[in-house]
Image (tube, rainbow, N blue to C red; front, side):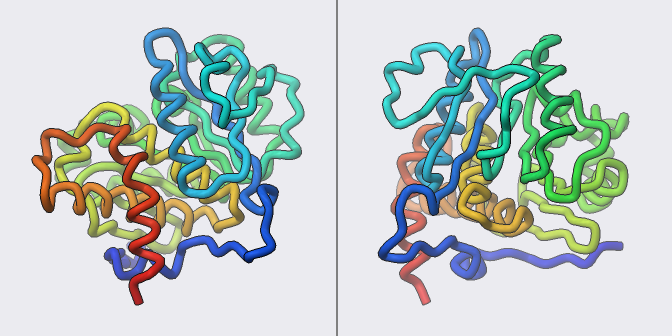
Length: 269
């Protein structure tokens, strides 16, 4: 059985990336987010905005993304199964995507050619068989049930066991989203003590994926990036319900609140 470590908001500060006064945009790193498809373009922008908000220096999106020219903060790149991935510090794939033959070829190209961290979420989870030690998958209970070929009820009965089963089967780092999100590695399971039911809304997982890849692009270790992103994600929701109704939180609100949350965590001793 893996050891269990509980992460509270007091633990988050030590994981925050630091930036020298003389730093420039290259210190934030370059990340690529492969996301969005017809009817789900918003997932791409939620992930990309979150990555920028947590400090990524450059965020690249597929040139095919709808309305990309209306978003001057992002750079674009033509996606292909032969694309050069060498200059990206981290990559995320899955939010809002539809699996097509082209996406499958691209995924296999990433598996073969990319050795830096990758976050696999949402639609791309169906392509997962075995992942590298520095890769991360981010399923919710329903998605993990499909991956493990068991019921969601079985996962809810013992989330720790399910996260450990997934780690043993797929390798890498498993982020099992839900009430007290779990981050499972080969030797440790981190239980995130922040977060609440306000996060039960479409798009919040896309924001989390963007936060993880944004932290990764700054050079954080994959486990630290996952733990920090999950912790901050939940911390924002906890702050929200202090003076707002939990039903009102939207995924875009999480992005708007990232600057204040990071500022507060960084200043608290």
